[in-house]
Image 1 (cartoon, one colour):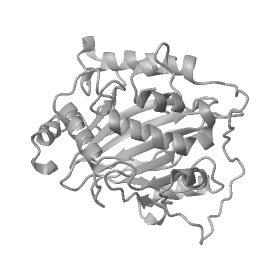
Image 2 (cartoon, rainbow, N blue to C red):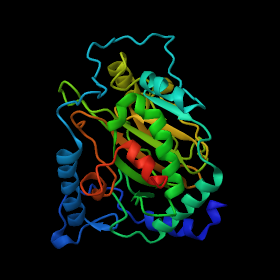
Image 3 (spheres, rainbow, N blue to C red):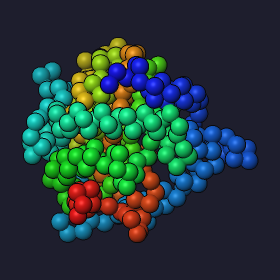
Image 4 (tube, rainbow, N blue to C red):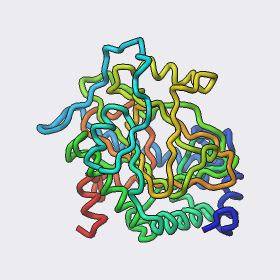
Length: 339
């Protein structure tokens, strides 16, 4: 599959090049005419409000049930980062080893989790989505020009193999960290095309300042090899909520793009690799200065506790509320495997 010559790749690139790079999708359109990707801005705002209400009513919780695993921000921070502190991204080949690495570093890389044929067929589906995106498919993404963001359907047979494998890996990695009650809050995909700008360093989750903030983890399946200048995921290991050095590393990580690069690490992902990260970790999508399209399918899971501040969720609303949701990690694995 030579992406630069694939007709659907060329078509979706042309569509993504037309997204407004400055569009914030947070201002109601004049009579519904303003656009947020393939939706009108007004459609986007109505859907986003319904999503927030569904999460507050059916997913988030201010209390923890028996057996729930607590997740609390480390408050006593060490202002000095030891010079010999390991800040490399841990890479493990066995899923049962990933939870400990994720807890310590806030990120873990699992190579070769999905076969190439599944990656190629899923990527072809995403290229088709992008060549003719519909309003019930797209979602907002920061710096949208040259990017696509798709909300995926569990009933779409074309993406089922990739989502099934992603759910299986997520169950193995995340159950020790959030118990059986971790619930699906994102199921989506990205295409990042040549010319896409680098995003700012950010975290997807902030402290709720309650006794228990819900843990939130994201899991990425890379459908393509990603070159050093091809829009790689960049992270600052140990900058997550559970790290003793969070505040110092977050300050240094944000400053690193202005001349202190030693705190930022690139994920050297190949097609079939999976990366899991704590949503409070400092990270970003770097600019795609290559000639290739980067494709990712991803999911996020929320444990028990208060929903973190600042989180936005790329997901179809029906998966967040009855009768189809909310969906636990175990329920998702069973459903995708025909259970």
